[in-house]
Image (cartoon, rainbow, N blue to C red; front, top):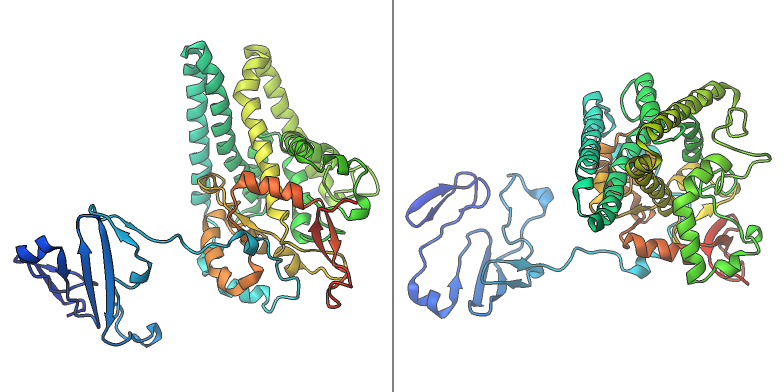
Length: 480
């Protein structure tokens, strides 16, 4: 009999089980040799297992005595817990007891590319927030610093191994060891970059000054002007999805496409474009506002008097520049002492990987065939914040502190610390419904697809659908 007080007798011994308890009788030898096994569970269900133990296959037949009551009607927690609640998903059982079930439901590519809703959402930001457990908005200084320490310790270990052991390797192996170091160290330092990014959002702690100090130190070490990027990035969050006011990776309208674009719209041209974007995109954005919002005059993240910033922010831009210059001078002194090659191998290689991932992550979060963009006649903040997509980077999701697969939640609640973002994402998905976008396409494949499909944005023609608004723009790739 099921229940917390039920007992199971196995081989003459009794065992208590708080959830799944049933009587199990020793199996007679003859039925076992014949491969016939019957197990009676006194839990509203009779499950009969008939298997041929030679091939490792089993057929489960479920005989319902009567249906279980809905979960909402259960007064005794655990009363109707069912050890075999989904036998239909069980395909095979090997002799060693291994089970293989069909993969969890995932969007096929046609569904992934299906356009996201562009109408006004039937929910409010307040309703979304109510679905999230309150503790997800709590910021812990100790927990936040633990992630900083974790990343810096791992980075220090990689540095120690590279500088103390790589020179002992046979000469050909060093050509393999250093690129591996650049890749893994670059991934770890991207995680450090993400923590500094959280400081800019005031998601690190409850203390703004502490957040700015930590963010300034970490970002400066990666040659990022902390306050400069903090302010422009805040405007990106305030205007996401707007063709007129967004700050980064603002898609071009067809009329703004350059004459040479048609010559790059081929495999060789796409590969060249992706390579240049990943290697030079980040410094070009900081220095020349490449891919950023167009301004009426030259815009630069290092210019305190540039059009990106207002008068109240100019002092902090000077501080950011001083931080970057201090680290640059430190690197110069290292190059004098250890040699330029040493600095490039130990620091330059990983930094190149960090910069590439920053561009790639941001690009894929805001560039997707299913995402709408809006002009001033259609844009509002919530619609714009939802015009982003979560991606799956595999194990790197954790290394990057889930900035990759919780980006929708981050755009809705940017002061939420990263260690609560996954729980929040799971909580809001039922509320968002079709407004939540996720694409699990492998990153390399997705990058190539987006470079091919997302060349410019254009509204739907009125002839196609009279209901379509001219203020909603979608990615296109046809270059006449």
